Length: 575
Image (cartoon, rainbow, N blue to C red; front, top):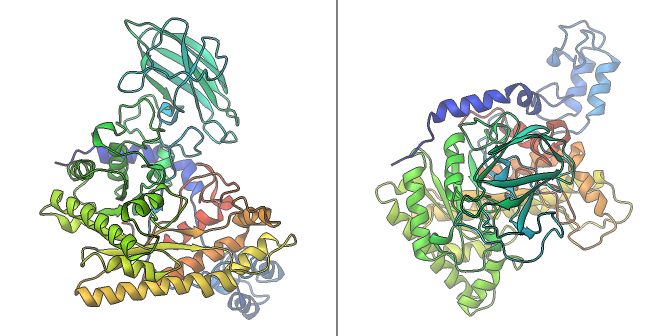
C-alpha cells in the first residue's frame, strides 16, 4: 500500500509557506522586458508599437500602447527599453505542450543543493584521525555500526566535513546539533559553539568556502555517540526531511530523474538490495547513492513522477525489490519512468566497458545491441511483473543517442514492442565554428541561435520524433518522444581551448535565455512531450556548467537557464 508521510499535504503546504516570501521574489518570472506584444521576443514589432503611439499619453505601464517604462508617456525612454533588450527571447507559440522535468545532482558534502534540513545527511564519509584532528585522515578504516556511526577505541577519533567548497553558498545562522550517546563532539571552521550540553549543541555558522568540520573526539564504548543530526536554522522540529527551498524551486517540474542520486554512472561492483543505502544511514552522500525511500518520498511531497535508472550491475533481486518498494510506497497516482543504466555508448561511464565485456562485441555491433536489448527486456519484464494489474503506471524508456537516431532504432528493433517511449538527450553546443582567443560569450550564444540549434540539434530531434511516429504506426499505440537530459553543453573539458572562459561566461548573458527558449521549442516541434534538463543545482567548472542554478538560493536574474525554464512553463496548466 501507499505510505504517505504523516499529514503529507499539510506538511508540504507549511514548508512552502516557510519560504514563500523570499521564494516568491526569487522565482518571479514576468514578461520579457521590452516584449510589448507578448510574443516572447523583443524585435521590430515591439518598436513599431512605440512608433505607432509616439508622444501619446497612455495608461501607465500599458505595453500594447507602447509604455514599458510605466510613466504614461510614449517616448524615447520606451525605445531605450526595447533597444536595450533587442533580440532577447524567442517567438514561442501561445499554447506550449512540452512538459519539463529536471535531473537532480549528486548529494555530497560539496553540493550547493540544500537537500535535507538535517545537514548531516550531506556529510562526507568519515576520516580516521586523532582526538586533536591531526592529521585530517590517518588512512585507517573507521569501524562503524550498520548505520555508519563510528565505534572508536581509546585515543581514536573520526571527523567529517559538510558544505565545503561551496563558496559559502549555504545558510548562515544558528544550527542545532542533537545526538544520542556519550562522548565529545567538536566543531571547527565555519561553525562556532555557542552552548553545549549532553545531547545538544548550539552553533553559530558563518558560511565560507571552507565549510563545517565536525569531529567525534571521544565516544563511550558502552553508549557510543550516534544519531547525530545537524539541523539547519529553524528546522529542528521539521516534519519533512527536505529543505523547503529545495522543494519550492522544483515544484514546477513534473518528473524527477534520479540518475545521479543513484550514482548510476559510477556503479561498477555488483549491486545487491541488502547492501543498498538506507534512510537511517548517517549520511546520504555515499558511493552507493541516496536511499530509494528518499527518492520516493520526494516525489510524493512534490506530486512529481520519478524516473529511475537501474544500475547495470544490479541483479534481478535488486530490480524486483526496488520495483516492489516503489509500488508500495509511491503515491498510486504517479507514473514511474524506467531506464536501464545511462548512456551505454558513453566511454566515460562504467556501463560502457561492462556492455563491451558482457556482449563480446564492439560498440554498436550486432552483439552489443543484442545484449543491450536483453538487459532492457529483462528490466522491463521484472517491473511489469511487480506492477501486475497497474502496468499502465509504467513508462518503459528506450534510450538512444542524440546525434545518431540509427542507434536508437537499433535498440528499439530488439525490444519486440516492449517499450512506451524513446529518449535521447536534447543538448546544444559548439557548432564547429572557428572560435579563438577573441571569441566572446555573445559569440557563443549567437552561434547556438544561428547554427548549433537549427542546423544540428533540431535535426537530431526531428529524426527521433520521426522514429517515435514510425513506431507508433508500427505498434498501433502511442510511443512517446522524451528528452532524458538537455540544455547547453559547453565545456572546456581539459581541452585548454583559448575561449574556455567565454564558454563559462556564456551562461550569464541574455542570449543564453534566448537560446534555451529556441532549443525547447525545437524539441517540442519535433514531437517531444517531456524534457528533463540536466541538472538542477550545480557549480560550474572546467567540465561544464550543468547547473541551472549555481546555488540553491541564486536569483532568477543571475540564472538565465533556470529563468528560461520557468518562462517556458509559466503559462502551462499546473500538474
